[in-house]
Structures are given as structure tokens and as C-alpha cells.
Image 1 (cartoon, helix red, strand yellow):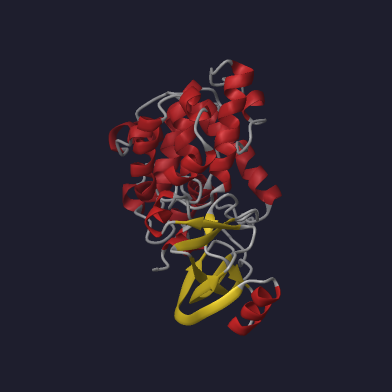
Image 2 (tube, rainbow, N blue to C red):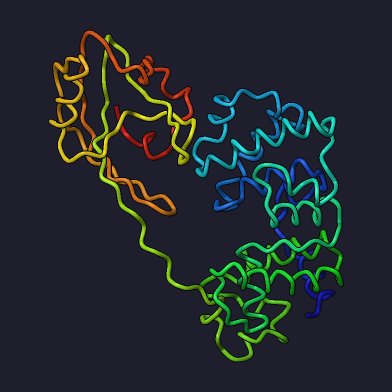
Length: 334
């Protein structure tokens, strides 16, 4: 690989992203967590608001979980932010608020895996640690003509080792960002702009007209589909919400929902628990697609009297927007 040419291309052509114009490890960490499974364009406004509100890891560590969840509402994959908050408190308690500068310390923090630790070490500290994300996998697979299935972890590790040999010959902070930028701007999944690529003269896929064959990715399993009856429950001029305890969307608020076939099943169950349902009516069906599952939400408006379930939280209608809620339920109109 012509690493000098790659790095020169990056210096001249990279996007001037706020988190790529700094070596602040805290900023780089925040950006890398946000960029997991999320496009740069969607991340930018959230990143700018977050570092303005929490300019240091110390400030972040003081955030209330519910408030912080509201700050990142709309980005999805909320467990990563729950881990971010945990990690910030460990950094304050165990490292006196100084962001760790050793790979062995970073990798132990909640939510920081091999890729994120490698990105922080290489970009913030200019240390040669591989950071292999989807963009880098695509670039290297095409460049090398690597026909191993990249959904298999051991195959990713092989490519990661190859990336490590390259970064050891490079300027780490430039190389890591150059590979990410090359995958995002030039070596795109479809219609790559090979004519603008600094590596085209050595690229196996380009030279053999096989860019569409790399990387090799085995077929994903079909998304699991769920059908829910979702309730907009009114009780004494307030709306009933539930705070999720399930791993998916843990800590976010939602309208109570049930995986049952009929609204009558819910009404009967509530009546058996002493909750009188005085009115219900079907409103609309909403669909939300997550990475691994699909929710079909058949929404009913409902009015209950006398009492509510213990795990229901009563909220004034106009205050619901102040609470963290997943987009799946935020799209439901009251």
C-alpha cells in the first residue's frame, strides 16, 4: 500500500468535521460512540450540542441518566450512551477525570471495544493501533481482494492484523482517519469513485473490475417481526407511560404495549386487575424498523378509571416531550 499517497490524499481532501479537527480524546471518544451505526450527517448536530453542554468528561459524569437519554434521543442504540455515562464516571473516579492514554485501560471501559480503543489511541494519541470499522473493512477487502466472509469474527481479526501492519508504517492519526474517509467518500458500498482513489493503482478489485464482489458478506438473518397493541391511556387528564427495563431501549419511556392478538385480551386482563376501562378505540398502525427487528404497533386510545398499574407513570400530555422516548413511540401521535 502506498501509505504516503493515501495520507497526502487525506490531508488535501478530507471533510472538515469538528471531531476530525481535534486530538482531544474526550471529543474523539464521544464522536466514535455516536458514529456507531449512525451516519455522520445525523451525528453532527447531536455532537455539537453534547460537547457544548458537557465540554469535559467531568461534566458528562455529573449528568442525570434521564436527562442524558433525552439529550441523545433520536440517535438510537441507547445502550451505547448508558455505557458512555458509566465510563465517564469511571474515568472521573479512577483516573481523576483525566482521559486514559493506554489501550489496556481504554478497552476495560464500558462500551469501548477494540475498534473504539484503536480509534482513540491512533487519532488522539498518534499511537499505532488498528481501528477496523465497516469503511476500513470495505477498503481493505477491495484493495487486497480478500474473499473471506466479513460477518465471521475470525476473518475480521485476520483483516485487523493486516491493518495493524499498515498503521505501524504510517502516521497513525492520519492513517486511521484517511482509511475511514476513503471508505465514506470514495470506496462506497455502491458506485465507488475509483477514478478519485489514491490506492487505485494497487487495488485488486479495481484492477480486476470486481468492486461489486468485495467485501464478501453472508446473508443476514431475517429481522424478527413483532405485532404489538400499543395503548395511549388517559387517566385523570394524564397519559400513562412505562419506563422500559428490557435491554432494548432500557431506560427510555414508552406507551404501554402488549404482544397479544386482540385488544379484548388486554381489556379483560386490566379488568381482572381492578382497572376499569371505560373507553377504547383503534387509532392507527405504525411500523418501526430496528437493526434486528420490526415493530408493528396497532395503536388504541384508551380511558381508564379508578386506578392504574404500578409500573405505569402518569405524565401530563404537554410534558411527554421532555422525557427520553425511542423514535418508535415518538412517532405516535396522541
